Amino acid sequence: MVNIANAIGRICITNEVVSNLAGDAATSCFGVKGMVGRSQGSGPFQLLRRESMSKGVEVHYNDDGSVSLDLHIGVDQGVNIAAVSRSIMKEVRYKLQKHTGIPVKCVDVYVDTIIG
Image (cartoon, rainbow, N blue to C red; front, side, top):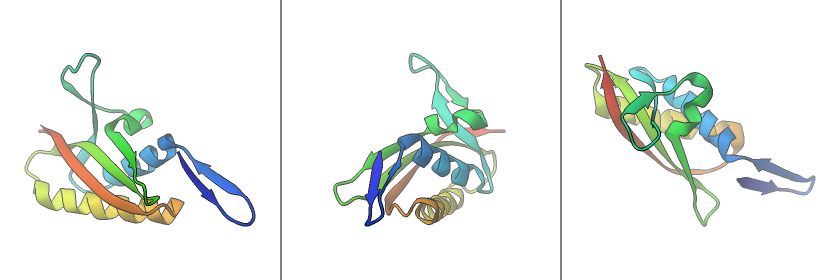
């Protein structure tokens, strides 16, 4: 959870909000089929529904007040994975900082599956 305090009061932003914003930003990028999670017991990867996309995002809080994110995604077959990943990194960083004011130190993208 992120706590932002100022002269007027305090704002608490939960992990779920950060994860949902990051997942929404990532899935809006061209070539991204969706967020990916593992089934119980480390089984095969599963494409997550919109309401549970936060399970494909891991949020790490840094000592300097910034966050680092790990995104697990599935991409369309035939897309340039490097270009899609760069697009996701920029979009997630921009939207998260714009909507929450939380500085984003790092966005790591893990392509777990290619969906054809």
